[in-house]
Length: 212
Image (cartoon, rainbow, N blue to C red; front, side, top):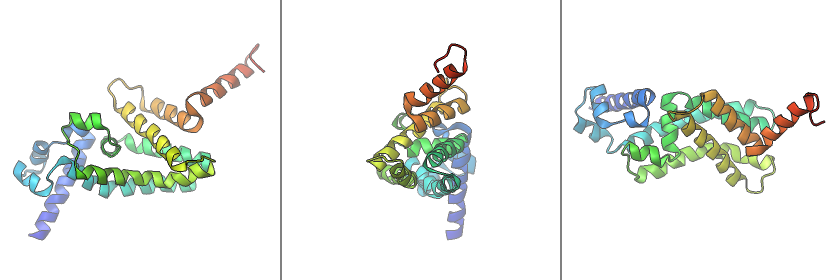
């Protein structure tokens, strides 16, 4: 009996991953899970009392794996600036997959998206946010190495850029994902104006009559 429940629970998690990959947050409904697994809707509730509880378990299982990929990329990067670039680009690369993007949006506390999906805030939210917060821990030291007086605040702001890029890339009117990623990386590394000003000055300096 215990083994059967374990298999059913795993089947529900796999079905949830598929639904998120195919249709994002809005696709993750209990009727859809019931259809996908062949269970009665009431049986789905026996395993997970809410969608937030289901997503919490997905985060518990998947976020550490994604975090390990990001951490490995950061460790391979040379210097704080390159580590920041790895932190941003690898999160956005993971988010290009629909399932990753949906779970990251939920974990980041995208209240608008989750409200549209009908997922109410409950105790699971705090645990989801805590799991997502583990990503910040790996970049706080990098922020300190870069000289930020409040490295954890700087890390949270950096993660805010990533989260915003994930939401932007998922919107119907979004530009190509690689354009969003490039903009996010430029802002993360150089601020809203810094990178663009340097690029403009470099181009001006190469053209006849441009600024020296």
